[in-house]
Every structure is written in C-alpha cells, then in structure tokens.
Image 1 (cartoon, rainbow, N blue to C red):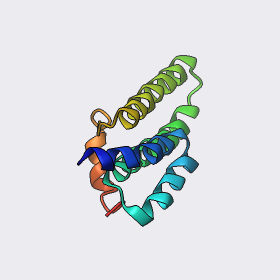
Image 2 (image 1 turned 90 degrees about the vertical axis):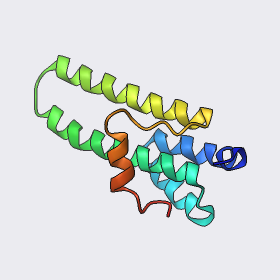
Image 3 (image 1 turned 180 degrees about the horizontal axis):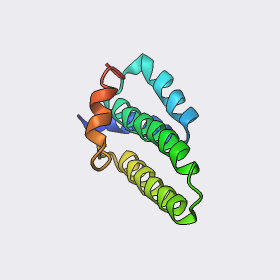
Image 4 (image 1 turned 90 degrees about the horizontal axis):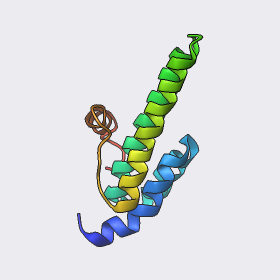
Length: 110
C-alpha cells in the first residue's frame, strides 16, 4: 500500500473507531473509493465494537466493580491501539483477535 492511499484513508480510519455510528459512517463513505487502508480499520473497529457490545452484556450481569473496571480498561487499550494505528498510517491488528476480525469481515471493502 502506498503513502497516498494511506493519507487518503486516515480520516475515515480514525472516524471508524470513535463510535459504532462512526464505523457505519466510515463504511458507507468508503463504498465509493474502496480505500484498502480504511477498509482494514473498518473491519477492526467493527469487530471491536461488536465484541464490546456482546461482552458488555455478559459483564453487566455480574455485580463486580473489579470485573467492570477490567472490562473498560481492556477495551480502552484496544481502541487506543487502533486509533494510534489509524493516525500513524499503520495496519496494526488488535492483539489475538485482529486476525479473526479480518477473516470474519473479509467482504467489507472488497
């Protein structure tokens, strides 16, 4: 991937991590140009947001502030990692689960 592709896709790659709505906005805005850098980050952020919602539902069933705090810190670190990758022009996959997100959402951006 060349520098111009990365430079063009940085904005939407960053937006995709902000909220789930940001992910949808980045996805739809990327439909015209099909920027591979943006597509990579949309797949990562969509996977993170869906995992966040699913695990958040499970964690909310427990009445433990330690578990809730660990959950928030875990996802804050993952989203921060993704945002830094988007802003620096790198394709950093989320640790352990990033490969699965790329496989599951492989049709996004194709």
